[in-house]
Amino acid sequence: MEVFMHQDVKKILVSAEAIEQRCRELGKQISDDYRKDGEVPVLVALLNGSVPFLAKLITYIDLDIEYDFMDVKSYEGTESIGDVRILKDLDRSIKGASILLVEDIVDTGRTLHEVSKLLLNKGAGKVKIVSLLDKPSRRVIAIQPDYTGFVIPNEFVIGFGLDFNEKYRNLPYVGVLKDECYL
Image 1 (tube, rainbow, N blue to C red):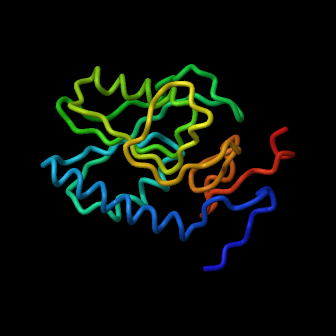
Image 2 (cartoon, rainbow, N blue to C red):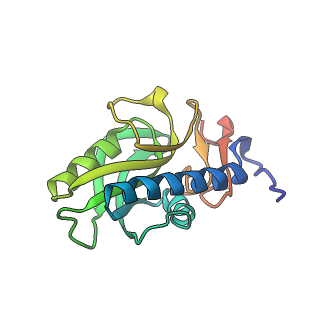
Image 3 (tube, rainbow, N blue to C red):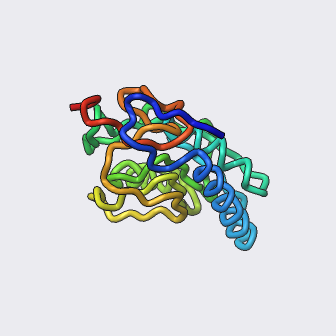
C-alpha cells in the first residue's frame, strides 16, 4: 500500500505496515498471557490518541474482552504539564477487574502513573499497560508498559492517533512533525 507523506511530516518513524504487524504480535501475546492467567481483561483506552491503536489491537485479541474509555489531559501543545485531569471517567464499575490500559505513547509517565493509581483506588484487581509507543528518554516517573509496540527516540511524533493541537491524528503511520510546525 503506497502512503504519501504529509507535507508537515519530516520523516515516517513507524509505517502503517509495521503498526499492523506489531498489533498482530501484541494481540497474540496479550491473548496468550490472559488466557494462561484465566482472566478476561477490561481494556481501558485513554482518549483520544489511543483510539486507532485500540481499534487495530482488539482485532488481534482472541478473548472475550470488554473495553471502556477515559479522557485525561496532561498536555498543552508539545509539553506535558505534569497535572493530570480526568475529563471523562469510566462508565462501569471495575471492582476486581483485570485492567489493561491502552495508551498511544508513554512519555513522562505521569499520566499512566496517575490513571493506574486511580483505577486501583476504584478497586481494580490489577492494572497492566499496553502502549503503541514508548519514549523512555523523557521518563520522569518510573513506569514501564507491560506491552510495548515500539521504543522511539525523543522526537515529537504525530499520526495514528497522536496529534499536535488535535491535528494529524488520522495519518496511517507515526511520523516526526517538522520543527517549523510547532516552534
